[in-house]
Image (cartoon, rainbow, N blue to C red; front, side, top):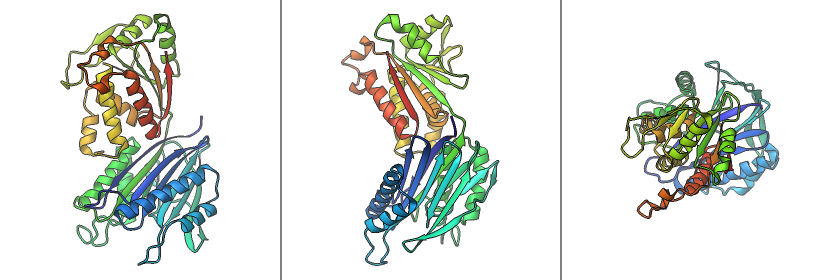
Length: 393
C-alpha cells in the first residue's frame, strides 16, 4: 500500500489585506503526494496573483512530468517583473513524497523545511544548483511512519520583528517550537494551527507579512466507512450492510440516519441504543451499536458536518475556537472531527430511497435532498486531500 500522508496548512493574511499573498497546492499522482507552497512578492492582490500563478504552473508541470529546470525556467519567463526592484517572482517550496517512501524537496528562497523524526529535528543533506541565475536547493531522502515535514513562507521567521522580538522568530527557535508541538499533537492540522497561532501572537494579531505553515505527516492508512440512507430496494439491505462492514480491523465506521441505524441493527442482530443526552439543541443525540464507532441522525447532522468541513477547507476560522467546536460531544462535531483528523480515505455507502420526511416544504431547501449533501461531502473531503469513493444502492 505504501506511504500514507496527512496534509494541512494554515495562512494568516498580512494585516488589513483581504487576499493572502501565499498559496498552497496539494496534489496527488498515482504514486505520490505533492505539496507546493508559493509566496508572491509583496502583499495583497498582486502577491496573490503571483503566488497563485506560481503554484498552478508548478503543479501542472510536475503532474505532467516536467523537470525542475523546465519548471523554474517557465516561472522566470512567465511572471511579470517588478518595475521597482526589477525582480518578480514568487518564492516556492515543493515537497513530493512517493508511495515508496522516497521524498523529493525543492526550495527557492523560502525558509528551510523543518524535518522531525522520532520527536527530534533532523537535517537533510542538500544539493544546491543554479538555474537561470537562481540558487535552488534540492533534497532527496526517505521518509518513514511518524515523520513530520513543515514548509513555511518567510512571514513565519519575520514574526515579531521590531515588536516582541528584535530580529523576528529565528528558524532555530521556530523549529524547536515545532518539535515541542509535534510531541503534543497527532494531526497535521493541529500542528499547522499551533505554529500559525504562535506567529499570530508574535505579530500581536496584526501580521506584518502573509504567513503560511504547511505540514505533511507520514501516518498509517486510516479508512472511514460512512453509511447514510436506506437502499432503494429493501432486498439490497443485506448487500449494503455487507459492503459497509467490509475491510480490515483498522476501518472506522459511521452510520448517519435513524432508518440506516435500524437496518444495521436488524441485519447484524445488534441492539440499537439511543443516547438521551442533548448536547446541542440543533443536533439530535447520537446512538450506539456494538462494533460501529459512531451512530448519528441523518440529514440535519450531515448538513452541520458539511458546514464544519467547508470552514476547514476555506482555511476560515481554523482557530482555537474551531477546535473547541470540533471537540464538542455532538454527532456533527464527532463526524467532522473523524473525517478531518482520523481519515485518509472516505468510503460512502449511500441509499437512494426517498425519505418522505425530507420532502416537507417546511424544511430548508438545502436539507431537501440527501444526495446533494453526499455530493458536497465527496467534493469537500476531496479538497481536503482525502481519497473518496461513493457506492449507491
